[in-house]
Image 1 (cartoon, rainbow, N blue to C red):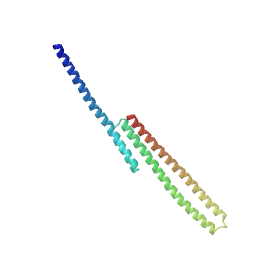
Image 2: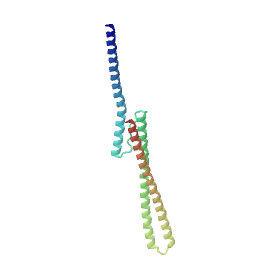
Image 3: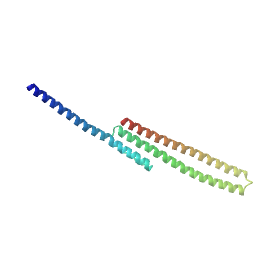
Amino acid sequence: EDAGRAKRLATLAMAWTFACAVIISLVMTVFITRSVSGPLLRMRKAIVDIAGSKNFTLRAEVGRDDELGQTARAFNDLLATIQQSLAGVVSSAERIGELAERSSSAAEQVSSASESQSHSASAMAAAVQEMTVSIDMIGHNMRDALERASEAGANANTGFEMIHHSQEEMN
């Protein structure tokens, strides 16, 4: 009878130990899931907000120093790079506009000078050279703007791939 009682106590102790282990495992699972899914959801919201608003001044919240925090920092760095590239593109576009206005003005001056001073070939040659320099500058600035736009696109793709890769690793 003591052996049967000892066996029941041992079985009961094992059942309580198992039940406690299951409860602790469930609590840890909920905690770990929330600690990963919460930052991921906030990062996803930031990405969706930025994509929807096209506002590259917004940033993802970085509240951790683990892989999720590193991913958020990398995304923020990518946004800063895109923001700088876009600022360069805008600046180049403004310079192109200014140069186009200068070219237009130079063309008008050439036309006026050729009508009023058709006998002065040297004056015409100088005006044509000014136009050529302006056009070369416009071409150079357009190539620069295209390179910056391509770089911004490549950086956006790299950021998307990094985020997608991080998401796949977490899944």
